[in-house]
Image 1 (cartoon, rainbow, N blue to C red):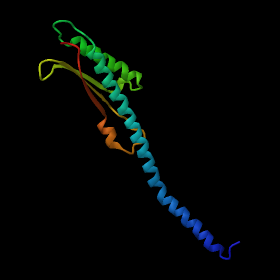
Image 2 (cartoon, rainbow, N blue to C red; image 1 turned 90 degrees about the vertical axis):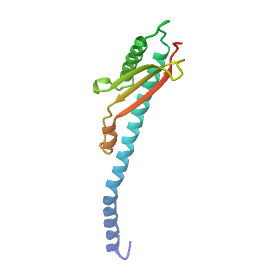
Image 3 (cartoon, rainbow, N blue to C red; image 1 turned 30 degrees about the vertical axis):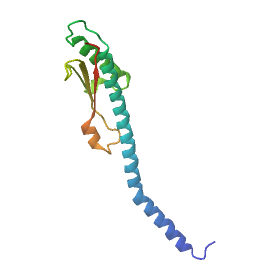
Length: 145
């Protein structure tokens, strides 16, 4: 037993006060880490959808005088299905746009897929991510020559 029991009680009290001061900071950092990891996961899924949709569109062959209509339709429909399959339903206001264009040299056609998904934060610690949403663009050369 200590010769000074009142000093032990004072130490316990100061530890409780220090814990109370540090706890909000730790919770804020923990919430921000969770929010950022969820955002990065959503970004990865949206990027993969854009890449896979551009690939699907790039392998469609329209024939001797391509117009790009079938290529763009295939890429857009794949993007909507892939978003739903990735757990990101498009009823939340996502947008999928495709562009099919002749390259700068005039030799190759390119398909570009843009996917924008509204990110809904879970913890609310990083409102900048929620306001920005998740965007991904991917371009690929098609097989039209």
